[in-house]
Length: 185
Image (cartoon, rainbow, N blue to C red; front, side, top):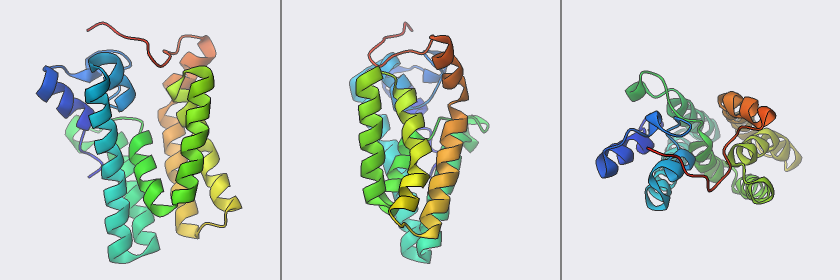
């Protein structure tokens, strides 16, 4: 489920555009917003959230807590290293959030609030994503979440931060794109 590259599929189907060739080159909703606009971006966001949520839900329903955590993590890994994109992919924020909302809804709400606050103050979606992913395992510990959920939070959060390494370099250099900036295609 995680390997389905919704950003690429929607870009090609609706606009005949490979979003990987424009903007940040990412397949996620933020780059789709910059390249194609709000409606395709909203579709990508919803579908990416649903694939993470669907995997975690199915894993939890069939195997239990560890099944949900492992399936959620595999969807995040699949999004980052899609078999359909020669093991390239996205940063897994929306996919990870979908899984997190199934596994630990309170933590998901806290992460979403921290991300929204960070983006509202800075207009950097990448920074909001990094903050939310970094804080998630600690919030899980503080709220007494189960071990499988904490393992998911630490592993998925760590992968999401690693996938943002180029964004971190651009943030430090003052060259990161802010929310609302358009790119030419």
